[in-house]
Length: 218
Image 1 (cartoon, rainbow, N blue to C red):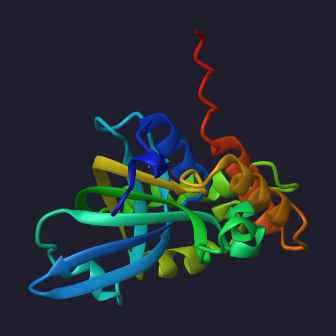
Image 2: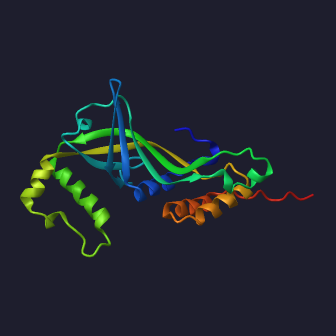
């Protein structure tokens, strides 16, 4: 992923926090010139591996589990994004040399993919996935709420996997390369939007704005 220094996030803790908060990932592998991509809800386990481990599952009908990847695999996570109109920039009035862009957050996890053909492992993964998203709901749904034979049939149709993270990349493209006045305009424009996603991006732009350099004394 192309990441200018002003947009880079290098803190492993922040990157893993983002994955935890945005658990729908896009698993991408390449094999013999063929690309496979599958969108999946994933469970992050920070205690396993040097940089954490992801667990997920795919349908056995999905070719993704039967094709051995060439080299490392990739999981892409994305967050809030918004179109940025140049009309919000103060520099538009100054010289007009501005164009539209898009603000977004993306985290790429690279690593080793291993499918686990074990029913006990699969059940533990499914229970962890359900617990992760049912916690706080009243009443929380449990796998045991469904008929056992129904769950058994579904489990036969899927296979679990582990994804050991070996490196992480994070990009917060949030107007950090613009002037302070332009950033103010972006925050104001997005904050006035009726779209909740735009307003979420406004908050990130505000949190990510570069610090103002101190004034040098004589």
